[in-house]
Image (cartoon, rainbow over the protein chains, first blue to last red):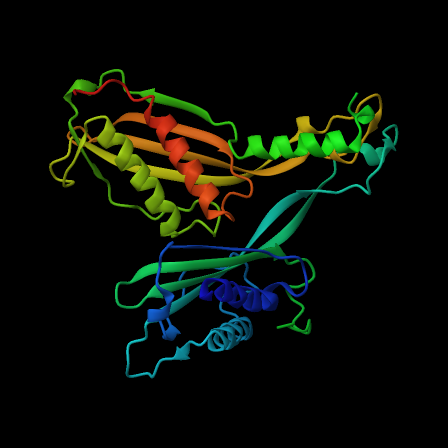
Length: 166
Length: 183
């Protein structure tokens, strides 16, 4: 059950990233992993990988938003933030990536007369954001779960007032 | 012709296409160093894993992907009688490269008689994956063999079981092209 709940964690965090755009959400994990032994979490060292977009790299507002969203979601799944003096059961990393992707435009369906320009192949470019959340077993330093959400960032980046919907 | 087919038939065909996509076509090929004597190779080890980008953040530093590839290679090489040893003693060092890119299939844009339906009015955009297996001769530090597989990887990263099955199939097909080894 917890595995399903964790999926919600990423969605909650990703909504911050992507506003209300459609998200593709999925995860990888070990089958047969015993989640019940993990009870406490803490943040791992910051991800050194660049976000691929200067608007997100080292943006404290963005990071604060993501971290608060993940903390909130973890808490609601029954994870407690570990005391600073104690080693947590799991360590969380996240990584945000922005990359240009292309999409084929959907037509509005039905049969069309292709004599006109609108029958040309229509390719559009958009900025796609990916938010990745890694959960690492703190004792073994092995990745036990990775979840992500991908969606278009059009009109989201650089628009800080867009309300986070989590 | 397609536009005369009834919607129910189209739905049926779509399901069939999805089933085939589950076994997406793999294009497999390999190069071998003509001077390499494959009968000499008896052992292998994994080369130190260099940091490489797969082009997809979901797969970068993702052990659920990289370990599956390594396990599949281990299994295929064991089946060919190669022994896994330490990097200092191995005849061959193995490198893996994986890459995911978006491709555009313009050929999918195929209006018929100046008309088109929704599906063939637009070109297809999909994620294509390339998996490469390099065998380096440890003594000469030269590449002995490279095999690779290319295939559509669309939607596979989001489905762990499908991804794992595709990795297993791709690795098996790639290493099936290895020249006959000593055993």
